[in-house]
Image 1 (cartoon, helix red, strand yellow):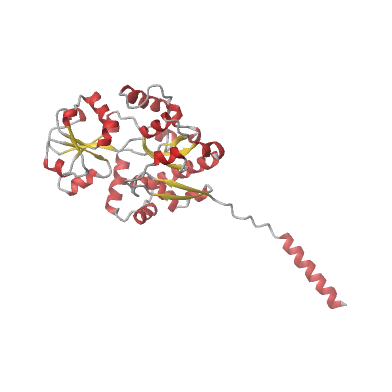
Image 2: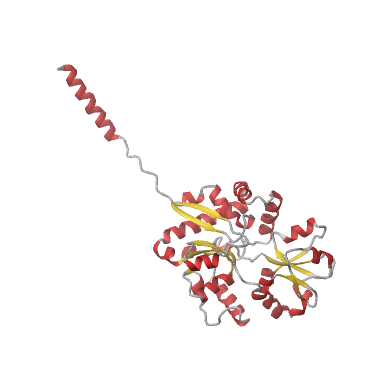
Length: 328
C-alpha cells in the first residue's frame, strides 16, 4: 500500500512540475518572399544580399529568396501579369509606364536616389561638363532613345547626328579620344581603366536627371492585403543597405559571388566605393528621411519633364506609380 501511495505521489509531483514549466512559444512561421532583381548579382544589389546574409529579413518575419535577373529578365512584364509579387524596377520610366498601362503595381521604396547612368570621356580632352560634349560623337545603346537621350538633346543641345551605336564593346570608344561613351557608374569606368584609359566621368543625376533607380515594387494586392509584409521588407532592406555601405560588406558580397560566378571581388569593391563616393544610395532626401526615400515633388518633376518630351503620357497621375505608406 505504501509503495502504491508513493507511486501516486511521484506521479502527482511530476504532473505539477510539468504544468508549472513556462509554455515554450512555437517559432513564428516566416512569410516567404521571392524578390526578383533586374540583373545578375552585383554590388548594386548589395543591400538586399546583405539583409539576407545577416538575417535581417528573418528578424522582420520574412524568409526572402533573391532571384537574380539577366539579359532575358523582364520584371515589368512579370509584375504587370501578376506572375511575381515583388521585384526591382531599374528606373522611373518603368514605374510610370506600368501605371500608364493600368498595372496593379506600385513602387514602395527607391534605394537609389541617383540613377547610376553616366557618360565618360577620355582624360585631357578639355571636356569639363556634359555641355562640352555638344558636337562630339557619343556612343549610346538603343534603350537611351526612349529615356535619357531626348533629355540630353533638349538640355544640352545634342543632336542625333552625334549618336554612335553602343554594341556593348568599349573598343570603338577606346580608339576615338574625342568620343563620349555611355555606361554605368560602377562598371564601364573600371573596364575602361583596365584597358588603359582612366576616364573622366559625368553622372547624369548630378546634371539634373531626376529619375530614381533600383526601386522595389510590389503587386497591389500584397500592399492591400498584407501591408505588414511590405513594411517589413522595406525596413529590413533599409537596414541591409545601411550595413552594406557603412559597415562590413563581406556577408553580402559572399552571397553575390555565389550567385554570380562572373563577378569579382575587385568589381564589387569598386562599385561599392563609387556608390558611396557619389551618394547613389545615401544622399538628398535619403539623408533626411532614410534610405529608400521618395517625394511626390520629385516624381511630379520627372513626370513633367518626360511627358514634355512625349516619353510618358501627359495625362498620367504619377501618384499611381508609387506609395509613400511604407516610408513613414
